[in-house]
Amino acid sequence: MKERIGDLKINGQSSSAGGNYNDVIVNGEGRIAGDLDCIKLKINGRCDINGNVKAESVEVYGSNSIKGNLEAERAKIHGTADVNGNLSVNKAEIHGSIDVDGDCNAEIFNIAGTFAIEGLLNAGELKLSLYGASRAREIGGEKITVKRKGKYDLLGLKSRIMSSKELTVDTIEGDDIYLENTQAKVVRGNNIEIGPGCEIELVEYKNGFKQDENAEVGTHKKTQ
Image (cartoon, rainbow, N blue to C red; front, side, top):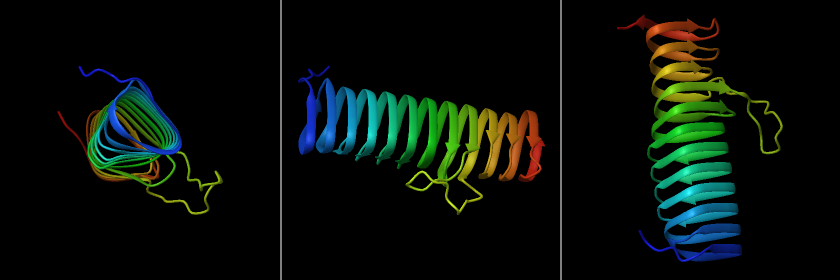
Protein backbone atom coordinates (compact mmCIF):
# COMPACT_ATOMS: atom_id res chain seq x y z
CA MET A 1 0.00 0.00 0.00
CA LYS A 2 1.35 3.35 -1.03
CA GLU A 3 1.79 5.97 1.66
CA ARG A 4 -0.62 8.90 1.51
CA ILE A 5 0.86 12.38 1.41
CA GLY A 6 -1.80 14.31 3.31
CA ASP A 7 -4.70 16.34 1.95
CA LEU A 8 -5.09 18.15 -1.37
CA LYS A 9 -7.14 21.35 -1.45
CA ILE A 10 -7.83 23.40 -4.54
CA ASN A 11 -9.51 26.79 -4.10
CA GLY A 12 -10.40 29.01 -7.02
CA GLN A 13 -8.80 28.02 -10.32
CA SER A 14 -5.78 25.77 -10.01
CA SER A 15 -4.22 22.47 -11.06
CA SER A 16 -2.30 19.71 -9.33
CA ALA A 17 -0.58 16.41 -10.01
CA GLY A 18 -2.24 13.13 -9.15
CA GLY A 19 -1.12 10.99 -6.25
CA ASN A 20 -2.18 9.30 -3.02
CA TYR A 21 -4.02 11.57 -0.61
CA ASN A 22 -6.31 11.45 2.38
CA ASP A 23 -8.97 14.03 1.42
CA VAL A 24 -9.14 15.87 -1.90
CA ILE A 25 -11.33 19.00 -1.78
CA VAL A 26 -11.98 21.19 -4.82
CA ASN A 27 -13.76 24.52 -4.35
CA GLY A 28 -13.90 26.25 -7.72
CA GLU A 29 -12.32 24.93 -10.89
CA GLY A 30 -9.58 22.33 -10.63
CA ARG A 31 -7.52 20.10 -12.87
CA ILE A 32 -5.66 17.00 -11.68
CA ALA A 33 -3.07 15.51 -14.03
CA GLY A 34 -2.71 11.80 -13.34
CA ASP A 35 -4.22 8.97 -11.32
CA LEU A 36 -5.85 9.88 -8.02
CA ASP A 37 -6.09 7.58 -4.99
CA CYS A 38 -7.76 9.05 -1.90
CA ILE A 39 -10.10 8.44 0.97
CA LYS A 40 -12.53 11.23 0.13
CA LEU A 41 -13.03 13.27 -3.04
CA LYS A 42 -15.34 16.27 -2.76
CA ILE A 43 -15.94 18.70 -5.61
CA ASN A 44 -17.81 21.99 -5.23
CA GLY A 45 -17.66 23.41 -8.75
CA ARG A 46 -15.79 21.66 -11.53
CA CYS A 47 -12.86 19.25 -11.68
CA ASP A 48 -11.24 17.47 -14.62
CA ILE A 49 -9.11 14.45 -13.72
CA ASN A 50 -6.73 13.09 -16.34
CA GLY A 51 -6.45 9.54 -15.02
CA ASN A 52 -8.10 6.84 -12.93
CA VAL A 53 -9.81 7.60 -9.62
CA LYS A 54 -10.00 5.31 -6.61
CA ALA A 55 -11.71 6.55 -3.45
CA GLU A 56 -13.80 5.47 -0.51
CA SER A 57 -16.32 8.27 -1.10
CA VAL A 58 -16.92 10.69 -3.97
CA GLU A 59 -19.19 13.75 -3.70
CA VAL A 60 -19.78 16.05 -6.65
CA TYR A 61 -21.76 19.27 -6.42
CA GLY A 62 -21.24 20.62 -9.91
CA SER A 63 -19.43 18.74 -12.67
CA ASN A 64 -16.65 16.19 -12.87
CA SER A 65 -14.90 14.49 -15.77
CA ILE A 66 -12.59 11.49 -15.38
CA LYS A 67 -10.33 10.37 -18.22
CA GLY A 68 -10.20 6.82 -16.90
CA ASN A 69 -11.97 4.47 -14.49
CA LEU A 70 -13.81 5.44 -11.31
CA GLU A 71 -13.78 3.01 -8.39
CA ALA A 72 -15.45 3.99 -5.11
CA GLU A 73 -17.38 2.64 -2.16
CA ARG A 74 -19.89 5.48 -2.28
CA ALA A 75 -20.64 8.08 -4.95
CA LYS A 76 -23.04 10.99 -4.58
CA ILE A 77 -23.45 13.28 -7.57
CA HIS A 78 -25.56 16.43 -7.70
CA GLY A 79 -24.84 17.72 -11.19
CA THR A 80 -22.98 15.98 -14.00
CA ALA A 81 -20.26 13.37 -14.26
CA ASP A 82 -18.40 11.95 -17.27
CA VAL A 83 -16.37 8.76 -16.90
CA ASN A 84 -14.33 7.75 -19.95
CA GLY A 85 -13.69 4.25 -18.57
CA ASN A 86 -15.62 1.91 -16.26
CA LEU A 87 -17.57 2.83 -13.13
CA SER A 88 -17.42 0.46 -10.15
CA VAL A 89 -19.18 1.50 -6.95
CA ASN A 90 -20.93 -0.10 -4.02
CA LYS A 91 -23.64 2.56 -3.73
CA ALA A 92 -24.36 5.41 -6.15
CA GLU A 93 -26.88 8.23 -5.75
CA ILE A 94 -27.12 10.55 -8.72
CA HIS A 95 -29.27 13.66 -9.07
CA GLY A 96 -28.47 15.01 -12.51
CA SER A 97 -26.71 13.18 -15.33
CA ILE A 98 -23.91 10.69 -15.79
CA ASP A 99 -22.14 9.42 -18.92
CA VAL A 100 -20.01 6.27 -18.79
CA ASP A 101 -18.09 5.10 -21.85
CA GLY A 102 -17.55 1.60 -20.44
CA ASP A 103 -19.47 -0.63 -18.01
CA CYS A 104 -21.15 0.38 -14.76
CA ASN A 105 -21.26 -2.04 -11.81
CA ALA A 106 -22.90 -1.31 -8.46
CA GLU A 107 -24.66 -2.99 -5.57
CA ILE A 108 -27.15 -0.11 -5.32
CA PHE A 109 -27.63 2.37 -8.17
CA ASN A 110 -30.20 5.16 -7.76
CA ILE A 111 -30.54 7.94 -10.30
CA ALA A 112 -32.97 10.82 -10.67
CA GLY A 113 -32.07 12.42 -13.98
CA THR A 114 -30.54 11.08 -17.18
CA PHE A 115 -27.72 8.73 -18.11
CA ALA A 116 -25.82 7.31 -21.06
CA ILE A 117 -23.90 4.08 -20.47
CA GLU A 118 -22.24 2.65 -23.55
CA GLY A 119 -21.69 -0.79 -22.01
CA LEU A 120 -23.46 -2.86 -19.35
CA LEU A 121 -25.30 -1.33 -16.39
CA ASN A 122 -25.35 -4.01 -13.70
CA ALA A 123 -26.62 -3.58 -10.13
CA GLY A 124 -28.16 -5.62 -7.35
CA GLU A 125 -30.83 -2.95 -6.85
CA LEU A 126 -31.43 -0.51 -9.68
CA LYS A 127 -33.84 2.42 -9.33
CA LEU A 128 -34.07 4.80 -12.28
CA SER A 129 -36.25 7.92 -12.09
CA LEU A 130 -35.96 9.39 -15.56
CA TYR A 131 -36.23 13.08 -16.31
CA GLY A 132 -35.14 12.78 -19.94
CA ALA A 133 -33.80 10.51 -22.65
CA SER A 134 -31.38 7.88 -21.33
CA ARG A 135 -29.68 4.85 -22.79
CA ALA A 136 -27.59 1.78 -22.03
CA ARG A 137 -26.52 -1.18 -24.13
CA GLU A 138 -27.62 -3.75 -21.53
CA ILE A 139 -29.14 -3.60 -18.05
CA GLY A 140 -28.94 -6.40 -15.51
CA GLY A 141 -29.84 -6.73 -11.85
CA GLU A 142 -31.89 -8.40 -9.16
CA LYS A 143 -34.52 -5.67 -8.71
CA ILE A 144 -34.94 -3.19 -11.56
CA THR A 145 -37.36 -0.26 -11.41
CA VAL A 146 -37.64 2.33 -14.18
CA LYS A 147 -40.09 5.20 -13.77
CA ARG A 148 -40.54 8.37 -15.73
CA LYS A 149 -40.76 11.46 -13.55
CA GLY A 150 -40.91 14.27 -16.12
CA LYS A 151 -38.65 16.48 -18.13
CA TYR A 152 -37.23 19.79 -16.92
CA ASP A 153 -35.26 22.61 -18.38
CA LEU A 154 -32.31 24.31 -16.70
CA LEU A 155 -34.60 26.58 -14.71
CA GLY A 156 -36.41 23.63 -13.17
CA LEU A 157 -39.59 24.35 -15.13
CA LYS A 158 -41.44 21.56 -16.83
CA SER A 159 -40.56 21.40 -20.49
CA ARG A 160 -43.30 21.74 -23.07
CA ILE A 161 -41.70 19.03 -25.19
CA MET A 162 -42.11 15.56 -23.69
CA SER A 163 -40.33 12.56 -25.22
CA SER A 164 -42.54 9.46 -25.22
CA LYS A 165 -39.63 7.01 -24.99
CA GLU A 166 -37.19 7.97 -22.25
CA LEU A 167 -35.02 4.84 -21.90
CA THR A 168 -33.53 2.99 -24.85
CA VAL A 169 -31.77 -0.33 -24.23
CA ASP A 170 -31.11 -3.56 -26.13
CA THR A 171 -31.60 -6.10 -23.32
CA ILE A 172 -32.87 -6.02 -19.74
CA GLU A 173 -32.40 -9.05 -17.47
CA GLY A 174 -33.35 -9.32 -13.80
CA ASP A 175 -35.37 -11.07 -11.12
CA ASP A 176 -38.10 -8.47 -10.48
CA ILE A 177 -38.58 -5.86 -13.21
CA TYR A 178 -40.93 -2.88 -13.49
CA LEU A 179 -40.62 -0.57 -16.51
CA GLU A 180 -42.15 2.67 -17.73
CA ASN A 181 -41.40 4.56 -20.96
CA THR A 182 -38.79 2.03 -22.01
CA GLN A 183 -37.91 0.86 -25.50
CA ALA A 184 -36.14 -2.51 -25.49
CA LYS A 185 -35.59 -5.49 -27.76
CA VAL A 186 -35.65 -8.16 -25.04
CA VAL A 187 -36.75 -8.19 -21.38
CA ARG A 188 -36.08 -11.37 -19.37
CA GLY A 189 -36.86 -12.08 -15.71
CA ASN A 190 -38.85 -13.90 -13.07
CA ASN A 191 -41.56 -11.32 -12.44
CA ILE A 192 -42.03 -8.64 -15.08
CA GLU A 193 -44.44 -5.70 -15.22
CA ILE A 194 -44.49 -3.59 -18.38
CA GLY A 195 -45.91 -0.19 -17.51
CA PRO A 196 -47.21 2.69 -19.64
CA GLY A 197 -45.21 4.12 -22.50
CA CYS A 198 -43.14 0.97 -23.15
CA GLU A 199 -42.30 -0.64 -26.48
CA ILE A 200 -40.84 -4.12 -25.96
CA GLU A 201 -40.22 -6.59 -28.78
CA LEU A 202 -39.90 -9.74 -26.65
CA VAL A 203 -40.68 -10.54 -23.00
CA GLU A 204 -39.57 -13.83 -21.45
CA TYR A 205 -40.75 -14.49 -17.88
CA LYS A 206 -40.63 -17.42 -15.45
CA ASN A 207 -43.25 -16.55 -12.82
CA GLY A 208 -45.44 -13.51 -13.48
CA PHE A 209 -46.19 -11.05 -16.27
CA LYS A 210 -48.34 -7.90 -16.37
CA GLN A 211 -48.81 -5.41 -19.19
CA ASP A 212 -50.34 -1.96 -19.01
CA GLU A 213 -52.96 -1.11 -21.62
CA ASN A 214 -50.75 1.78 -22.76
CA ALA A 215 -47.74 -0.47 -23.41
CA GLU A 216 -46.79 -2.35 -26.56
CA VAL A 217 -45.29 -5.85 -26.36
CA GLY A 218 -44.57 -7.80 -29.54
CA THR A 219 -44.31 -11.27 -27.99
CA HIS A 220 -44.43 -12.52 -24.43
CA LYS A 221 -43.83 -16.10 -23.37
CA LYS A 222 -43.35 -18.09 -20.20
CA THR A 223 -40.10 -20.02 -19.88
CA GLN A 224 -38.90 -22.78 -17.58
